[in-house]
Amino acid sequence: MPYELAVEELTVKFRHMMKEYQDMGMYSPIEQVKGRVKRSSSIIDKAYRKNIPLATCKLEEAMDDIAGIRIICQFVDDIKEVVEIIRGRSDMKVIREQDYITNRKRSGYRSYHITIEYEVETIHGRMRLPVEIQIRTLAMNFWAVIEHSLQYKYQGELPEHIHERILKAADAVLSLDEEMSSIRDEVMDAQHIFQDKANMVENILHILEKIHNLMTEEEYQRIYNKFFQIYKTGDMLELADFNANISQLDELLQQRKTKQDEEKKIGEKRTAGEKKIEEKKTEEKKAEEKTMERESQDAASRNI
Ligand code: 0O2
Image (cartoon, rainbow, N blue to C red; front, side, top):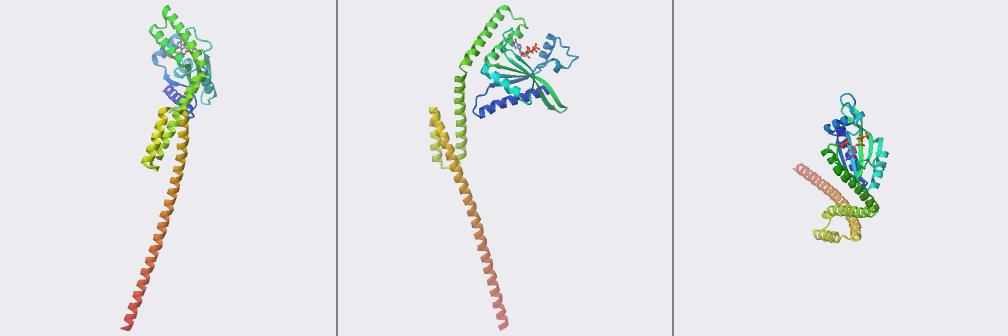
């Protein structure tokens, strides 16, 4: 099914963006990515709700959320960044945007929806499909998932007392998001520090593995224990120092190894050359001996 392909490809692409941010030690505006193809029962329900004649029309023209991607962010401000990323993509053509964050729905629902046109290549050729991307914060998602389940349970007719409570919960989610936005910089700093630490530890472990064979076991154990001690204290400055020192040590050890390898090669070449000369000399000596033997035999026969 081409919808599945579109969802899988887009999920990989957005998850890869998260990885790119992480690899660069940067904060990612995308926290989680989920994808789904609308289930047949939901397609029928929606078609019925919207008076779409399923048998007669092209489904993707009447329903643009058969393929759906959900991007979850930590903060409301991250949503704007994700929207900008999508608008700038050459492989995603924006065809519709619905801002349910500025204008929340009467149900209390908040989310930013972007419908894009996305091209997939199938064995039957190229196809352009609509995909709905819902972008929301963790808090908005929490609310939407609960409300969706309640709507399902009560088949769209929430009892008044539940409706009131769900609206109150929507207000609480709004203030939670606002509160979190005000401490976004603090949280992002903390996450940066965590990411920096993770990157440094990864680099140190990688180098330790690389240099293991280039030093004595005692030397290696001493360096490893030092790293472990610093890691346990959690002192970022000491960790950064250690990271710089071990990177330098790695460079020196690699240079030493390259030099040793070159010297070994030269030594081997020299030995091979000397061996050849030695062999040549032996051959010449043998030939000389043979000639002398032949000459003495000739002389002897002449004397006879
Ligand atoms: P499911 O099961 O999630 O697929 P429109 O054509 O814009 O007037 P449409 O096509 O319903 O109306 O689009 P809309 O309103 O943007 O909704 C698309 C999707 O957004 C919905 O898909 C939901 O996933 C989500 N959504 C919209 N409103 C609400 C809401 O009040 N509560 C919750 N929890 N989610 C909402 P489906 O097909 O309804 O459902």
